Length: 243
Image (cartoon, rainbow, N blue to C red):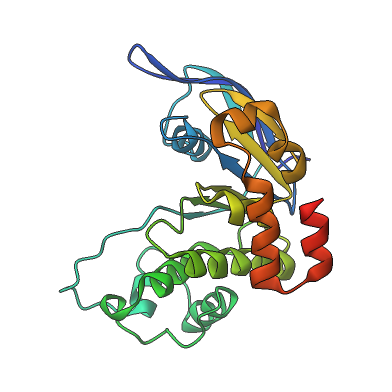
């Protein structure tokens, strides 16, 4: 059974149609990335999935009892507010210190439990946000431009952690991103959105699709190979990606 099924979804704000007749599914354990230019409806689609935006047509069907973890775009916390990572993670959920520690370990930052939120680097902050989304062991994790503001190595490290989360937990992942070269290497399936679904499929299929190239050019395939070569040092992967 699909975890999430979007059927003939349209979203309008007043007279402005931002999404039209979108169809997509999220299956257990897969990593799906939505890419598209600014204003293409990516965040509106995510908001419709979590119930924050009401569709003007169509529907979003969730598996009954589906547990969703959500990592928003970077959250601003008043730097003068004295709040530890542990307290931040326990603000809205009744969870133990052990639960917090386990989630931080899953997010790759096991040593941050007692640190002040105001002392964290951008990358550490996003790992804490990831840990907070993982704390209730979701079946699907939604990420909305979760690496916005991080440099390229920081983004690459974050997405490698996402792949590790999937390996360790079997959690499905739906993410929105503009970082095409990183996304293409991390995803099982890519959905190219521009108010509607332009194309979707494996990264290799989407990267060669005319609709995708019309939006993003032709450089992504080479960037995908470069990412694998530079960061994974896996030459077999490198050659597969280049092909």
